Length: 496
Image (cartoon, rainbow, N blue to C red; front, side, top):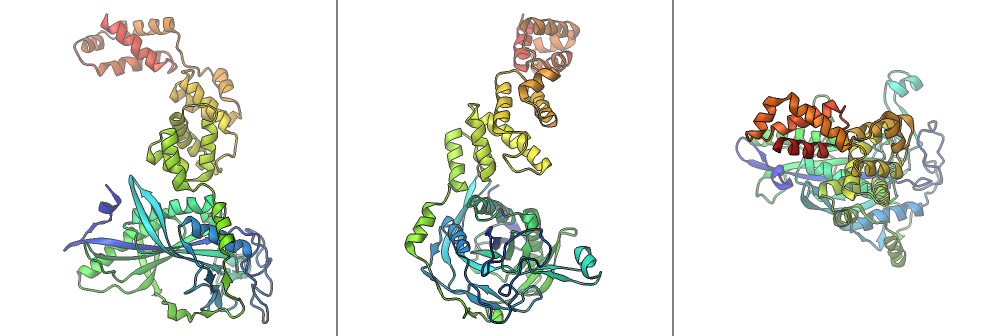
């Protein structure tokens, strides 16, 4: 099934297609905040990294963080955007407790960059999504609501504000409504996150809210060129929940339209426990925020030579690396996306291959046992006891027939548990594959003699019986027999 056919939703009266656009918010890993010198940190005591600027004291003036501009430019260039020679900061006015100024410094009609595109894969289909703009702004403070931390600090019915996060550099990536399905939206975001991490501008740790997104969704009859009224799912930071929320909202909108109703433009909340969306408030428009140029900041003029320097320093991007992995290592596209997308895992894999082992076998072990180990242990690629050298040593034992694939999985687990070397684990636990021809011939002869009925079935043309007989030899040898050799010896014995 392709992304295009997956996008069509069959209603009671006609076929509909989703129209999805995304707004991706990324906190930048700068040392200091967007407009002041306060440190950007995680997990420190509340309100310990604040100053008159980020607390909006009268007379305090903001100053633009040059590193944040550089990081934002990296993102814009990687998304094939045009970096505008002049961009302007604006005041986005709204009142909320996490915004001490009662406005957010953002960008409006003169953003950092415009007119880009991002290519991503959904299965075997490559899709392109246009990027409307990339702009810079500051993050709001963190609101902690009743119960939990807030309850301990200020009582069970209170909310408290931690201003440590307020003023953190934030990038917003706004797409055009080009995403054709909830599954495509999930793939887009996963691959976009890999890109941003590879650029070295943000760790995009979702648990800490470093990356979050809003999704705008509408539906229209298949073949129509007009956009329907959209609703917005706001501040999500789970790929799975985003896909579920979109899949929940689609049939709701279709049911309303087929019943003769109309869709209200509003912001929705998704409850993952019930799998349903509920309205929060009517959707704001630009005029609701009363944008006007920030009077305390001059326009930002981008030196073309400096932009070229930033472009020249970009690393190999995940999309290019996926293609390279397919061409150089002969990997299937699906495997190359898994291994080549995240930069740290890609570097680990190439270090394994550099040890001289088969690239496809190395890919299977990297995607399989190694990735499962990382997820279970909460480790990043390249950390922990399993080094590229150790995984390559294990892969070599399998390729050389020293251990079977199933036994190698035991070796992998014991290697971590005992913090040992693969060869030592094999010897210590007697996991080496049995390839002694004389010993295996004796085991085969015993199995053939002990199962005359199955032998006759095989000789009568029932080839699938061979699998049963191989299993009996494996059982007799404690699972250590070389399966290929057992097959060969059994066929020779049975064909006599």
